[in-house]
Length: 217
Image 1 (cartoon, one colour):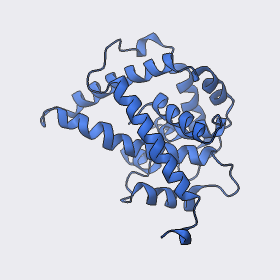
Image 2 (spheres, one colour; image 1 turned 120 degrees about the vertical axis):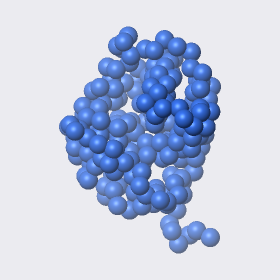
Image 3 (cartoon, helix red, strand yellow; image 1 turned 30 degrees about the vertical axis):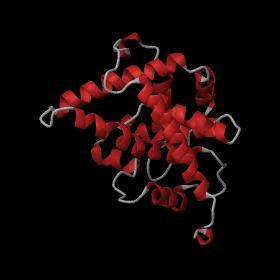
């Protein structure tokens, strides 16, 4: 799935549509589902649970279900819950637009371990490039650092979310994480095209959520 800088890019540009800069809570929510990686002995089932992967519904239906079941009553617009939903929707769109085509380029017999290694080498490079190039990144880091995590039942604890946020804030400064390659299969241009598409699609879904169900024709 896309790494934190892609998720944060979507959060920033989605907020800009409403003429605002993203709140700390929205930014924290937009990376929060991947905090499952901070849970000791986590497994694939846990990861699917926090990302609502097993729901066989459209993106619009998933957003409605999420809003009904998990959005905290009285939560602020473009707060943590909507950031969390943005992450989940971005992952779904990424799978369709990036991962599926990437797999189809490679031979059917290409080993899964080699696929994951190649995929993360390329996406690590893309994310590091975004970190270095985005003019809004320093302010986003400051806002993420100021965000206050809370338990998000039934998915994640505040401690897990805090740990993932703290990891994200320092990860990009470690030279050992830089593959120092020119991505071939997932390019910077491809990623920007995806971000633009994701923002447009998620903005449409959010606008739809604001409409009462009985107003739809």
